[in-house]
Length: 112
Image 1 (tube, rainbow, N blue to C red):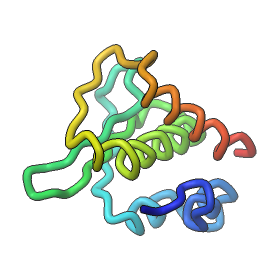
Image 2: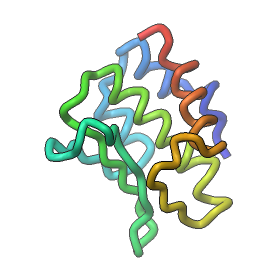
Image 3: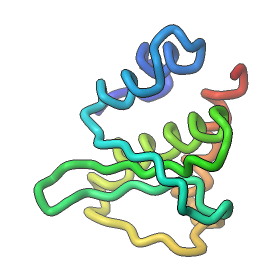
Image 4: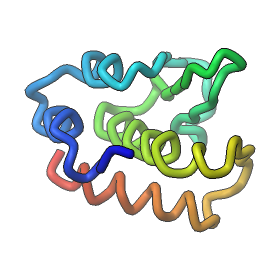
């Protein structure tokens, strides 16, 4: 399991030395920017039947919000989904896994 907080790719994302697209590609995650999401939905991740991770980000929010959402979802992909198999999350903003993912994203993006 990778250590998100010590990952060079994510650090490069934060200091903008590697493009956002290249960082997402490095994780082998199929990433999509959706412009038809509500402002209340910043993004979400899921695993396809073929085992590919898909990350959907809201294209109507700024770069900083997309970076935070990306790290939040990477935390779920790396730590939570392998343990749980799948998580369906509507109105889960107060759940422990959501709070932990938010804290990690906040910590890693505080210097954006």
